[in-house]
Image (cartoon, rainbow, N blue to C red):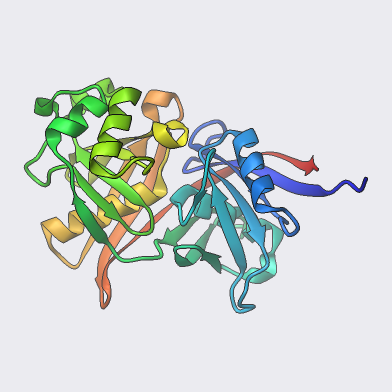
Length: 297
């Protein structure tokens, strides 16, 4: 029986310190892998997400990138794009400083950040879609999902809001004290997801506490296998776009710290701006390589 070997690398994203940030596995030459094999490999790696790099449909683009979390494929995600861009910048220097990835949610542009010697140190990505506000959820329903009471939620800027720039998150502002105390209740999560989103739908709750343009955040998505995520680029980009839409102005920038409670501190840089087709957002940060190997199937 013929065996097939698929190389991969792992790295930490949104950090300049190994074993901080959000881990990511990148299968750098995934052509020949079946869908079920990609899903099984993502479950085996057991990271928030794993990416699979394939030839692009349009040769003008850099690659087609598929993103899987532990239980399903995602149309778009932040840290997988930042990390995959960083990896390909090292493997394909001829690709230059601007990469374009074909994904389910659309075309994603990745701008590579380099140090003084020209080595890639990180990346910034633009979310593939403008802000879409999908609705709101009751404070009384969301608070117990995360082990809090309604008084812990801050509603002066917005109530819990479902929004997307490529993937759906429920954005919830809380007090600084409540942010540290939050803890998912899986049974309540399931009840709320069924009652408000339809049975089986993904419910990802992104909590944040804000001081001006400085933000502390946490993200819980236990129904899709991620109890807590140390750095969620797509959720942070969605938050930046939502805040700009509410607070006004032509552009907004935010610095976010996430993952502290998990022992994996992450730093994300956000930008949102008004464009002809709506409010757009970007997220960027540094990356650190960790491991490399091959999967034999």
